[in-house]
Image (cartoon, rainbow, N blue to C red):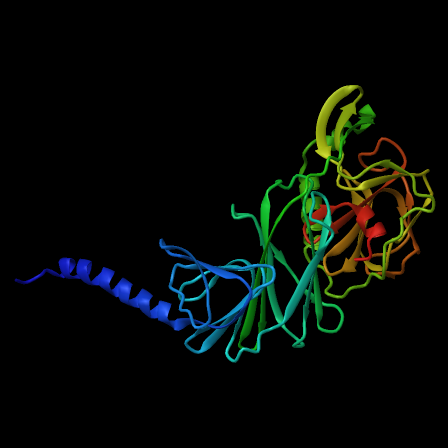
Length: 379
């Protein structure tokens, strides 16, 4: 009896699948292990691994805090570090933890950490250290729902790299995954670290604006163009780290009159208007009081804008910017390199401002973060 082509394929495909999966299964063998390592077999329950065991495709292997595992797959070796879970396939898929791949069991010994604890409106520094010299790093943060933020790593100290990012005030309070992929020649180590973002209650406030400034709130082509110019500047940082140590306050006698993160409602002539989150810190000051560079940087913008008035932007390098709003005057020119503590401007009340004060923002690789972190933490 002859079989038509479609019928033949329907028979052979499942057979091919079974054979191919068996071949993959046979390739993964336990070469070394320590401690308690378990495998959840594809539809067949759970068991503990032993030396020389074989692991099948679809199985999930887990190590604990005090255990590790080395597998051999044809010509490659894989190392599951403590507290790691992978799903076995043509390549082990890392679910969480740290997974190394090598041709000769000389795995990349990678250490990483981040500070501080991830939270809304906070800066996050990620550090990667390697004992094998220069490495290539691809990294990002995702939430599994379409959000993905790339991390750019820069060489820092010997065998050490760092990246800076942050989370917006309105970032969703949910689970995120930090992905770090490290390459050195033919060796590769992947890290997936799950974490939950911390909710921060920043409070609310009210700002009373005089009726004469009502027009500043209206949309305009000029405001759109000004934001386009500023966005272009903020997305082209210097790769050089110019800052040194913790940041200073940008005023001589710092008195905060409006904290970072507050949801502020604007009232114009006692009429409720728009509301927005305060993505900076306001300091008390009189018109003409000095504004000081909080750290070393390059002046990349010094001009007037509709909403922020006379505005000054310092590029501190590696995606870190300081922005100063509502200035009465600016005393440095674009392109100037300034040192920490140098007078760069004078406090004013230009733009949308209820009175004389200094607004200071810090922008970290696409995110507005709390500037006070940079005063209190040596990033």
